[in-house]
Structure formats: C-alpha cells, structure tokens
Amino acid sequence: MEDPVRRGQSGSVRAKPPVWQKGKVVGIIVETPETNTLQIEVPDPTPFLPGQYYNIRIPIEGRPRPIQRAYSIGSSPFPNYSVVDVGIRETPGGLVSPRLVRESFVGQELEVRGPYGAFTWTEQDGGPVLLIGAGSGVVPLMAMIRYQVSKGLSTPMHLLFSSKGYEYVIYRDDLERLESENGWLTVSHAFTRAPGDERCRYHRRIDKEMISEVFHEIDPKVAYLCGPPEMVEESEKVLLGLGMPEEAVKTEKYD
Ligand SMILES: Cc1cc2nc3c(=O)[nH]c(=O)nc-3n(C[C@H](O)[C@H](O)[C@H](O)COP(=O)(O)OP(=O)(O)OC[C@H]3O[C@@H](n4cnc5c(N)ncnc54)[C@H](O)[C@@H]3O)c2cc1C
Image 1 (cartoon, rainbow, N blue to C red):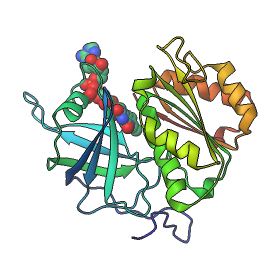
Image 2: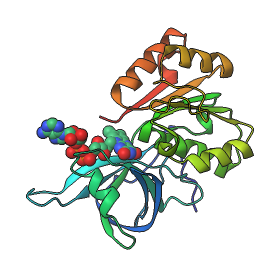
Image 3: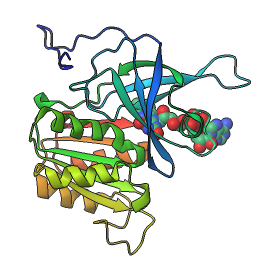
Image 4: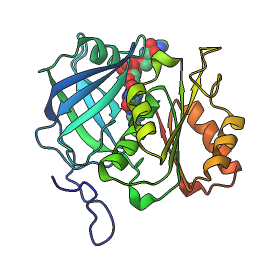
C-alpha cells in the first residue's frame, strides 16, 4: 500500500478533501471497562498521518440531524490505512460515546469522515519524543508508537500516561509488550485512583515535578500532549518553562 507520508514539492502533505463515507465495523477490541477500539474499514480511504483523527456521526432519536464527534486513530497508517482503529472511551451522560462503546457491533455501518488534524508525528519530526497522555488521550500517541514499530524506526520515545488505575490503562498489554520488545520505548504510568498499586511509577495526576523528572531523563526535542484541556495546558506550560521552544510542543485537547 502507498506510503501515507506523501509530500509534494512544497513539502506539504497532499490529501483528498474528506467526505462522509459509510465505514464498516470489522472488529471490536475491549480495551478497558469503559473503552473499546472500533476497527473501521473505510471504503475510499485517504492516507493519514499518525496522530490524526476521524469524525464519526450517528443518528440520535429526537435529533433532526446526526450528531458528530471526533475520535483519534490509534493504529498505524503503515502499511494499511484503509482500516482505522478508533479508541472510544465512554463519557458518562454523553450523547455519542456511550452508544459507540455499548451498542456497536461487527458488521455495523458507521458514517465516518477524515482524516483531520495537525497533531502528527513522523520520522521527519525527529526526537527524542516525549508523549504525555491522560485517559483516551493516549490514542493518537499510540498511533505514533505503532507507526515507529511498523516502519522499523528507533527514535527514542517516552510515554507518560495517566489512568485511573491498572484495569483502566488503555492498550495495557500492547504497551507492555512493545516496551519489552523495543529499547527505544519507555513508559511511565501514573495512577490517580490506585494508592498502593506498585504497577505504576507515580500515584497522582500528571504534575510539574513528574514532567520535570521525565524531561531530564530523556531530554526531548519534541513533545506531544493529549487529553483533557486542563492537563494539556498545564503540561504545556511546564515544558515551555523547562526551555522547550513553543513549536516543539504539540497539543490536542479533547474538549
Ligand atoms: C480532536 C479530538 C479527538 C478526540 N479523540 C478522542 C478519542 O480518541 N477517544 C475519545 O474517547 N474521545 C475523543 N475525543 C472526545 C470526543 O470527541 C467526544 O467529545 C467524547 O466522546 C464525548 O462525546 P459524547 O457525545 O459522548 O458526550 P457529550 O454529549 O458531548 O457530553 C460530554 C459531557 O458533557 C455533559 N453534558 C452534555 N450536555 C450537557 C448539558 N446540557 N448540561 C450539562 N452537562 C452536559 C455530559 O454528561 C458529558 O459528561 C476527541 C475530541 C477531539 C476534539
């Protein structure tokens, strides 16, 4: 399949403008008690970059039009960008995510449109790379990690990942395996609601001390922050305070 990183003479990525299409759910992976990966086959796919997202829209009873939400792609575009894995965490009381997590089934048709977003990493962005994610904010960061694996690259990457506890760690088994198989990947878990659990490095929310510690260990040249707006904004401030240039700190906020 064509390499997704297609650059024109100007250096910009050429892509077809996204249109709504009927994707098909070809697989469902239960990641945690509240998060599922939906593997969606896109009939007319556009090459995407690691870190980008798709919009998904579904009809909701009582609403005149379908309701759309953004979901990051957690899979690598290489070698196959025609099936996208979106990782969806159920937001309690939400309109769309509980339906996608609880009611989706293999064979289901879902309207999708993408890819979108400038929160992307490829080998051209260099490293070492500091990835900071909270909850489902890990999804686009995982795409970057999986892309490295699929391309056989070895840019140093460190993932600082905040979850409620061990059973809520999205991609837990995959991360454990990838870290043990690849010397370039290290992972620090922070559990916010699991005091005494020794399977994590930190027992609190992501904060200044934690970021500084990890920062000095890996000396990142680029950083990618994804998750709730407050976490992303606070972490960005810390990294700028530690001397990272603004253009080296990329953010994606899950509003
Ligand atoms: C670029 C981008 C990428 C994203 N990627 C992902 C991803 O990979 N995985 C993921 O899980 N999420 C992702 N998100 C978040 C996702 O798009 C949705 O915002 C999320 O799933 C919640 O949508 P929802 O329809 O379930 O909840 P919503 O209906 O939007 O509700 C959100 C919250 O607001 C509350 N609420 C709603 N209406 C009211 C009201 N009238 N009064 C008070 N409270 C109210 C709900 O109870 C709920 O807690 C991403 C967001 C962005 C912007």
